[in-house]
Image 1 (cartoon, rainbow, N blue to C red):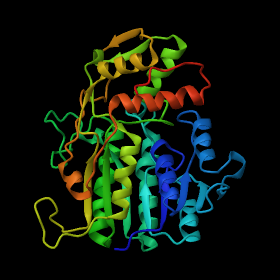
Image 2 (image 1 turned 60 degrees about the horizontal axis):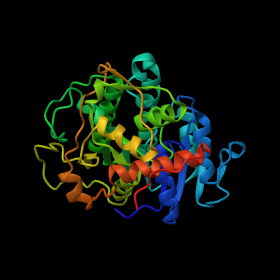
Image 3 (image 1 turned 90 degrees about the horizontal axis):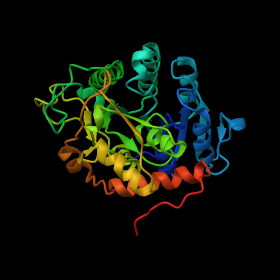
Image 4 (image 1 turned 60 degrees about the vertical axis):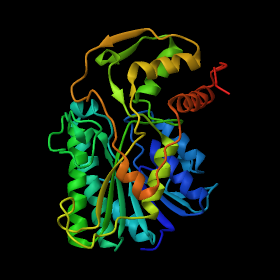
Length: 354
């Protein structure tokens, strides 16, 4: 399969989608970006990401001013007609489906948002891929699919049949649907189980952003599981490196059926993380050191739907793509905080190493 030059990215105004779009554009590739720009968190942050790509709020559904190879469309993926219209307007070599309703805890409050975005929206995109003869399809899964699995590190060979949140259940459903399309239609599908991605332009509902905002506002932070959580925090640039590798080297059908792939379909699922879990309390103390200010903490029990620890087994991904996450926790937090104080115009000298 030839390397793609025209790539459609859903969730292009999102955290990972923005960084991926920017990287591909700087590689000289054509990018067609789709995003609903909903209000799950502050839409202004999403528009400001798009502004970095040359798209203003007044110029949605247009070509970028900064990147002539970037086309942006504001589309709700639950609207199949709107999705098809975009696919009909471009010749597309590959699709990277990152759009989703995110968040474990919010899935308890608003379950239908997850069905609309993560099931119906996923199906609309994948069906458009089939109808237009596109054979290179990658998509965001999540470490949440491992649910209550107690065996660490998490391996893709582990059972993920017992999700403990609706969010996780929708992501597992995506993997099953993708396998079906790989088997029936020969579409190369690769699912990526992301592990706690963080970095500049990150989501305001994620721990690093929430903690930083509270610290600067002088408010206490909620520390669930009393800080005993373990998370395989992964810096966004390392994630993007892995996603680009997948796009350029899509799944191939094995020559023979195997126990892992009994249908011999061009189907893969990988973990993509840092392979080095960090205790949540250590993560918090690193933020304190960089900012030079201690947190006030409310230590709370674990929340429904949360898992106490995540830890990605990465050997198969490393072997397949020569993947080497290189960003340390300290360095990643420093880069996020440098962005945060600049974006929110905070006058503070950070304690930056080196």
